[in-house]
Image 1 (cartoon, helix red, strand yellow):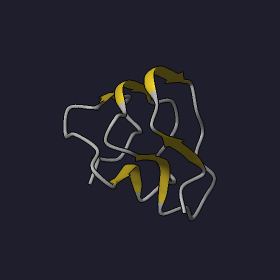
Image 2 (tube, rainbow, N blue to C red):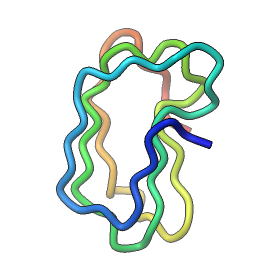
Image 3 (tube, helix red, strand yellow):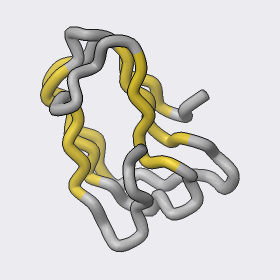
Image 4 (cartoon, rainbow, N blue to C red):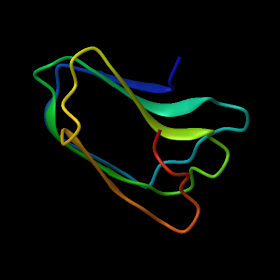
Length: 74
């Protein structure tokens, strides 16, 4: 389970986050009405995935502004 779970969220920006060691996904997004979510990644190098989507989340609902330490989204 992600550390931060967003459900049916619109126009959200999360910045300067740090993932604890050993987490599968740091951010989770669920719900077909989710949109306009921006993750300005801080230090996510300890997470296996920066973001995990489920449900009917549109592929363009989440934008990741990546830092050098952010893992690729899956």
